[in-house]
Image 1 (tube, rainbow, N blue to C red):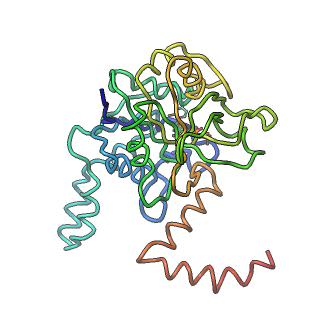
Image 2: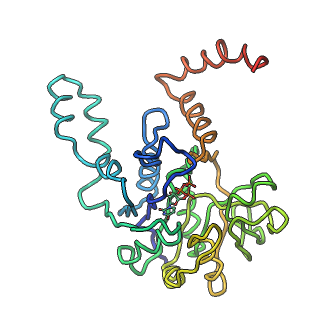
Length: 296
Ligand code: UTP
């Protein structure tokens, strides 16, 4: 039977320690790339892929995320009074249909696997997507749409993968396996943050997953792995014993926006593409910054 991906989990309960002090009171997912917070890019990607229900797994201090997707009556009436109808439309357009966002809470940041497990009752017994908003992927066709398309054929769990420099394997979940066609890897091993000498390959998992519901029983075991956290990669390594899991070699450029350098690069890439500010930013890079490149 062909199953459809209707629900997406957004784990947003992490502490964002790599981005302190900016993330002390501000959720990492609210950091803006040009003029939209990271979470909005990810939510738009999910809806574009046909997702009907968004499940935020939040934690302490994440109220701004809830407010972002809700009405702000004061702001809306002020914009209306001032005749700023275009801006008003932008603000109103980002509010999803009532009931399509569900919030659940991870009361301790025990890891990504644990955050996903916190959404088990909302997801129920169907395959679902997971999006990590701090992985921003610039692509003609959004990554989740690419994966949902592939899922129609595989009907199996799937992770987005990309090659990373071999010396960086200890920052990622790493997969090993056999290529099946252009885009898929039939995974035969998964390991979280292996040292470069122990990594099976340099194919790294990035923050887009499609998972079958059997993963919840494996996460329930609460096994602590790399970094003392409950890792989704470890649960998937168990899942691999009973089900196929695929790596999906997506089209697009991925920016790690949980990292200061990755975040700046994302802003440059999106700013250059932006019809309102692109020329100005390009002028700055070429005419003001570039002449100094040799002296810094
Ligand atoms: P990260 O590995 O980026 O961790 O989490 P982090 O805490 O957010 O950031 P750093 O490393 O301290 O800077 C990957 C994703 O998993 C979520 C995060 O919100 C992020 O989207 N996460 C992580 C949780 O929801 N709960 C957790 O316990 C851990």
